Amino acid sequence: MNRTMKKITITIAIIIFPVMYNQVNAQLGGLNRAVQRGVERAVEKKAEEKAEEAASREIDKAFERAEAEAERGAAEAEKGLNKLSDAIDEAQKAQEEADAKAAAMSEAIPDAGSAPYTPSESEFTYIAMKKGAVQLFVSKDDKGKITAQTRNTIKEITGDKSALAVAYQSEVLDAQGNPADKNNPLILNYRVVVSDGVMYLDMKGLFGAMAGLDGIEATGSPLKIPNNLSAGQTVPDASVRMRIGFVNCTAIITEGICLAVEDVTVEAGIFRAYKISQKNNITAMGIKSEGTTLTWYVKGVGAVKTESYDKNNKLISVQELKSNN
Image (cartoon, rainbow, N blue to C red; front, side, top):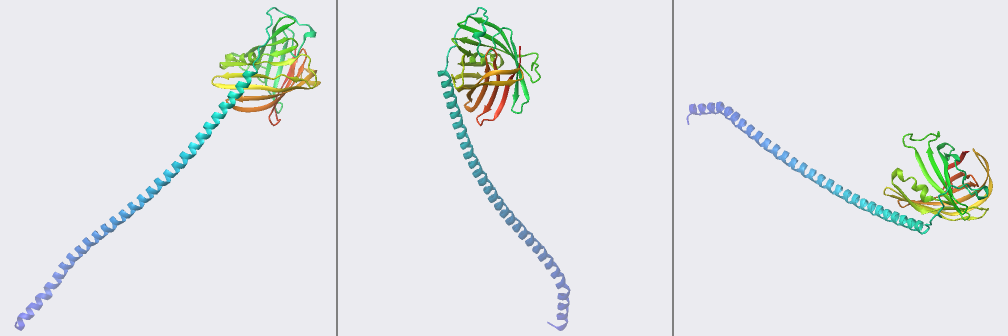
């Protein structure tokens, strides 16, 4: 090649190379960008896959924890249900035992004639024994606050010297001495029978008088108090079984004893009274509770004061005679 052609060739190369370089560079830049985008997409995809794997592992762990908690919860629930079932069985057994004991104590109250009768003072026992007599009692809590009042009225006395019945009407009042519900006053009717030197308080009749309230059904044996008490003398046991709707309640009164003959002061006055202690064993829906009752009985008047204590000998309530007319 001559010198002239060589110069022309070099000149053309110098002119074309930059253009070609730019074109190639542009193409390579596009390729680089494409590769970069591909790499980025690959990295993003890998990151997404790792994130999905991590999320999946966390979800699996969460499910495992939830399943473990559920299994523990189910086990605890099963234990709780078993305990509840055992408690129900024990309560049912306790209620059946209490009912059976009360049933074994069942005793009929002697019959008394229906003819009007006026007992003499020599026949007086530990109740009011005058037709038309009205007694007002106040009930107080352990702090001495009046919570309710009760008005007892003797409606009639029937029978004869061998067996007589005293018919009571008892009205439950509020703390101020007014009917708790003027439209539906709570009035109970029950009786006390005196026969062969023993006073029979009709427990069945007393609680059964509440039957109109909630369909209460009552059975049981009477509370008996001998006419001639003395210090140290024991008092027979008594019981009552009640059914209030689907709830069974049984009260058994035991260990009765006359502790002393002493003066007792209440709002209605000072009385010479026979102080009797009795144990109360109550089972309601299989749940047992125990306590003690102290009652002061006065001949021709009745129970002028009653103190109720829980099993720890803590005073629960007091009822005492406010007036005696």
